[in-house]
Length: 398
Image (cartoon, rainbow, N blue to C red; front, side, top):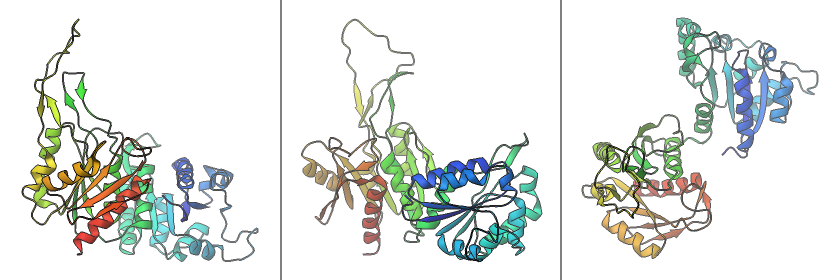
């Protein structure tokens, strides 16, 4: 995700410092080069050696380090970075920057930075609610600085409220948005479905499929990064949506249909990446069905095809479908393309190595209503999502 990117992390003196250690590991695992600057107070919580080990780089703690051959470390480090993350950011450091005070290595480097600077506040709930702090945060936003809002929960002091450092996933999302974000889809409203649906037989059993939701979540993430307003309607999955996305969890095909149909009129692009159950049990048993000595049969009723139903009143909306096929792939997908009134359809065969459900990669072919067929090699689902969105962008601007 961050291969070839330089991430500079500033650490101030708060108990949440320990969470930043895991954050450095995540950035390194994702391919980034990481450098760390620590205030003197931060070193009281965690040793610089910890971050030197994790980042595989020296840690800057002094404005004029003896080991540095030049006396402009703050300039050199600010120019090295692609993004500057201050995590955790204390009330004190945020107040200094808001007042133009640069009295240590971290604050001086922040003031010298002409790259995105993201603050991740962490403090007691009373400090976070303090009107002076809130004024400082508002002032910094107006000057082009970014903030990852803290969450609510139990604080180090034992109190409960806002001020808890945001989850690492939200912080990583914010860095990703600043590094890769564009305005290509600004003003466009995307409605994306993901994951499987579940159709209950009784209180403990249900019909479902192997969809993990990874493809739909990747599409939602990339659309958001490229500036879209995104609503993600998903069946049961073990994934967390990208920050800033409106997430709508559902369980059954009927619930997914209801959520999609009521949002269609306010949608510019519909992407149906969910693996929606074609059938549901004809009857639901209020009690657990008992095992019998003989074989049992199950009567099923057909679910509505959500994409086909949406296509009946498509208008200017762009519709993209997914076609999972294991035989007669192209013929079946072209039939779906026409029957469901799609602008294009994404075909994949889950029996191919690395493709389909639960993998982080996919092998797809895109077929559009103009008769064009485009094959892609095995790619990560994030890259496949970008390829799909590139085609959406072409349609919007053609």
